[in-house]
Amino acid sequence: MKHYKLEATTLAQVNSEIEKQPAIALYFASPGCGVCLADLPKVEEIAENSGIPLIYIDIDRVPEASGQLSVFTVPTVLLYLEQREYHRQSRFIDFHELSRRMREIKQGR
Image (cartoon, rainbow, N blue to C red; front, side, top):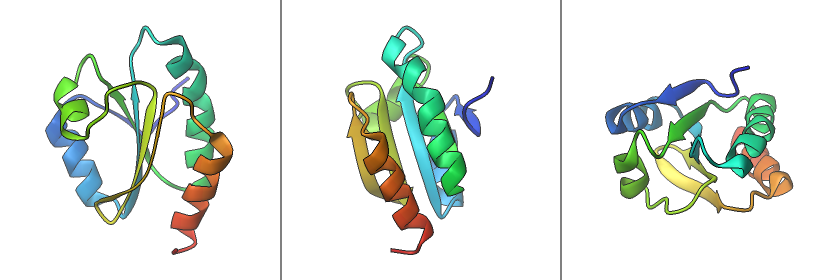
């Protein structure tokens, strides 16, 4: 089951999606990370319910993306609004807070 809009395979692709979308969520993970795999469906559901596209980024395949965006641990969720970082969570994802922040974005705050 696919739990994201797109799997980014290059830094250029990540940057392009940030530029194209008024609001976007980036999910950084590693395939060997059990927490990442467990959290992904929850994050995907929150993003889907909020109408915000979710991009999956494997830090092993796209290490330059994690370097450019200062992602040093997984899982990490970054929310972008108008090409600026709006919210960040790493390691322990607070799903209620993430949902609240995505709702704020959709409500135009």
